[in-house]
Image 1 (cartoon, rainbow, N blue to C red):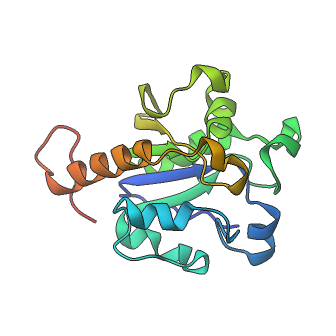
Image 2 (image 1 turned 180 degrees about the vertical axis):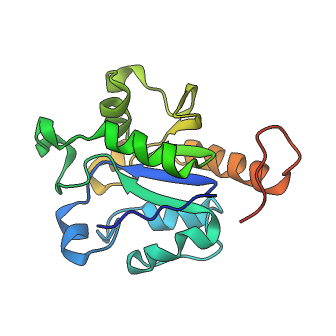
Length: 176
């Protein structure tokens, strides 16, 4: 699936790889059981509930999308070791320079940062990634429903609103 990236984005959400359902639909987070689109709307990152096929609209709201295992699809546990491409992700972040980058699962963050998932708390991280403020979010996948928490998504949305609403604040960016 194509990246949804451009310079000037407030937030880039990074998945691991599209599910087989998403790959077949050619749309990000297309599994009807995935909470991604509902969560974006519920926490206020999008003003309306988008359908998966509307993913190209996300830059209207200052949001981009990509994956860290871009050339593969399927569940995280089934991805081969060579599927992960953290260097490619880092290059994209350097090229597009979003203010925030948020992984939509611990696994994608762990593979990119070279740490175990157990050492990654949800929420804002103390380090940056290619000069982007770094966040790790609970997966919205149906496979992770028992571990899903809305609070880290709400905290991210509050930070995005803070950056959008006060361009004169430190690290502020204009509204998209």
